[in-house]
Image 1 (cartoon, rainbow, N blue to C red):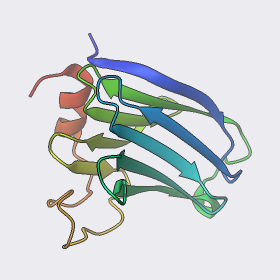
Image 2 (image 1 turned 60 degrees about the horizontal axis):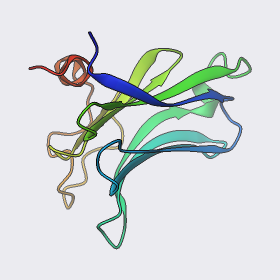
Image 3 (image 1 turned 180 degrees about the vertical axis):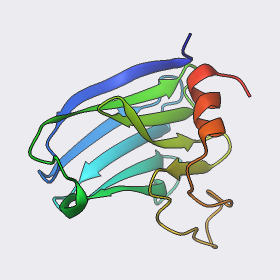
Image 4 (image 1 turned 90 degrees about the vertical axis):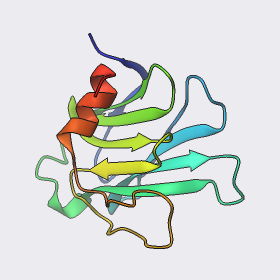
Length: 140
């Protein structure tokens, strides 16, 4: 049994400028945004309690490196049931997670390198299957 709720399900054309936003199911201050600016895809954690709401940015892809970009994809943004963690899926494959409780983000590319002045992702952005499973199934 999954511990997530799908909030956003959209068709994605890689390389076509698009923004998809999803708000936490339980905390109105938390939201995530996926953006394809025509060159890259990024997944952002936003917290409206701050002057600069962008708390974390995770690189998902470079458009030029996506082999099947001409085929429409399905983008899904899901939230943990407590509304403090989010997962980005593209074609049912998990690409990134954002955890507002632990101020951490991870993605398949592991990019960008950790920003030493940030309180987010002090262990970097490298993908960790255990963290993904913890969010997906709601257990450690």
